[in-house]
Length: 524
Image (cartoon, rainbow, N blue to C red):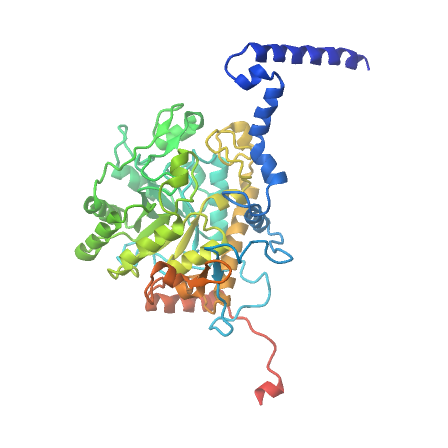
């Protein structure tokens, strides 16, 4: 007890000193007026997200991802029971805009009855990437689910490595993000190399695009496609920002930038300034590398899309794929006004762009990739019904490898080591074990998509059309998705040839289910 006699006075002295400091400081009025007690307010504010996440919030209240959504991702990543009991706690009848998927009593596809069936199905894309334009290295992606562009720098090295290893296990593509191709991207996963406005990893000492360096990068890694990033949903028309605290020596070397300074990407590309010069650059990259080339963009003014598709129709030049990112998409750092209010959410944005291509008979020549909270089965099914051929999942993949939605991505203090360069924090993330979780999540998402497709009577989620979904308008009304967005019959589906090809592929990948033989009465 001797230590207690000394400890108590020492603690009282320390608190008194702290109170005196609060009374004398002039930066914080609350602490000056309420010494010590005022500090409790700042403590509660700092741990508020955690308190709400685990104690206060209901299952469907939090954003960006609700507790139910996170629970589904976590359970899927761990290959645990991701079922929910006692029925939905979503307020379906009183939620305008709620999507309802219409199952078929008798459809072409017959689901297998075993719940675990489908985990190992590759679920290939219904279209060949680059096939319509006969690119030298055109290919059919093995997985409709891809890992979205999240740069090394925004994410830690171990996190990128875990995602890449997981992509290799799951047989899906991994987008590098605009931060360049790092050593952490070289663990077996096939890549989409993203080219942002700063041309990280393929630029010269003055920051200019360097074609030779791009070709070297492509030759030295399993790069299957190139994606030109025009904008993303959470920060459209802004350049990317990597705070100085995150710019380590390794990141600086990977990107070709100074260490320890804010890394600010330009807001515009230097290699093109309009749709005409953009298509010239697309064709140059495709010719020099042989790879399919696409663009990633958020959706605002439609003039860009009209001009782009007019040129594609009239000149024969064109992109091989289009990634549409919704305004609800994530980012490591952006001004609040941009994350909240600039660029259309995914459904509205995609449903405006797709018809622009379809009206010019270009929709069957382009692979459409959707992004923006589409790593959840319900959102993904609506995306396929609108015409997506593939999905790019970002934050859901982060959740799968340990993210807890602390929303500290911009501070370099991510507690799970996913979105930080702090060595002490990243040491807790083991790429080997987390890669397995990433793969489990991707496989489970594919399985659920396949199960819903079969419930809709088709063999592949890309064959779910806009008539298979209705949007509730409240308790007493619902409107087919096709009518909500003014789609014409046939829009949202691949070409007849692509539909036939993918049905044949799926008959091998996922044999049809069945039941007991019919009784003599039924046979008679």
